[in-house]
Image 1 (spheres, helix red, strand yellow):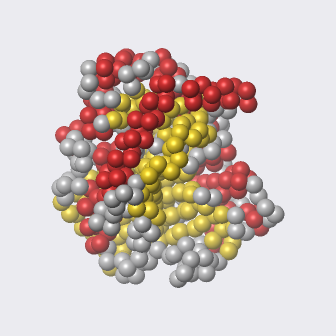
Image 2 (cartoon, one colour):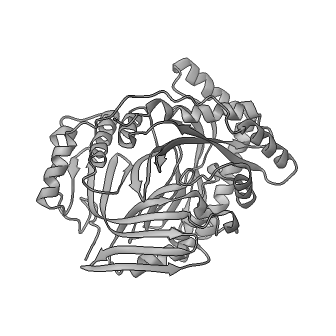
Image 3 (cartoon, helix red, strand yellow):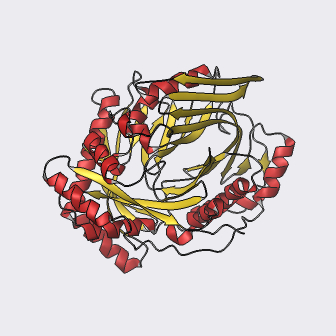
Length: 463
């Protein structure tokens, strides 16, 4: 039976075998030192290729490395594919589905027959289409979600490195690789200043549609191609040193590689009844010196367009949380704080509620996905505009990377400030929130500011 181990230190957990702790916890490392070291360790494990497909997920000072998939759930436009080896038996099923993807995933998880499980993976932007009646915009071969139940979980935090339940051979390799630098080719500079797909023109079109009353806000994005092979683990290691994300991740699943420094959560359900979302809307550059950063912050807090955009987003998130929460429990816990996220600073709020047991975490994900701050308001017409106005598919961009378990915990972080690679191509992507007062030149400038969270850290793959 494959059972994902409980977290070290919790009731019923397996006592972790500690490896390499002297390299993490000698003295008291600062948050930045811990982040740099932990990202380097996880990057080395990923880069080795020894553990197969993997997901690295950073949360609250703890890095999780999940690999050696024992079960895999892939959601396509019409099927749920379940593949794995459980209880010594091979499991391979393809189940047709219609309706809500949350119900399809829940059914697939129930079908695993595991009393306890934890899974890692991603849901792509197109995961939103069934909920909003937009499946006609989704191509037949698209993957809406790719999730794994790992056979190996290793953790890095201030107490060291642990791998509950791992065998001695695996522990030895984790120990050796933890002290192996991530080798890579040259660091590159990516030019993000060319408007190759008429982003400004698309913004102008959206402003016209907003002023015609078709929707209130839409997030339009643009893609920046990278013309060489990228070392994704090395880019993650380097980029984590230069960012201050809400969450970070590094993954290789189903031919897709990605590394990202997410600025916000789409949704978090703690398994004890609380559900939270953290909308960000309103942006200025950050990291240009104390005086310039302070001036940009003051400008952000005084900008009527940015304030209106943020308030609109919080109101929409409140309604979404309210729809899956027990009556009277939805609240705005923080409103319009400024949070620093790599090369930019944002207006940020936190909205929470007591999750209705009849809704559950997967339903909450379906309602809140994609984030208001990556889609628009009202969500359905804004999503339709994205499908219509953007020249290429978003795929994982503005989707989510997630961790979930059988206790009801689910956390999905927004897939922004990321680099992607698949099929011999690599690319960046960034967007901006368009409202009636938007100016195309300023919105293009905002995408450049956001791309600055990743573009300076791209590492060419060694030849």
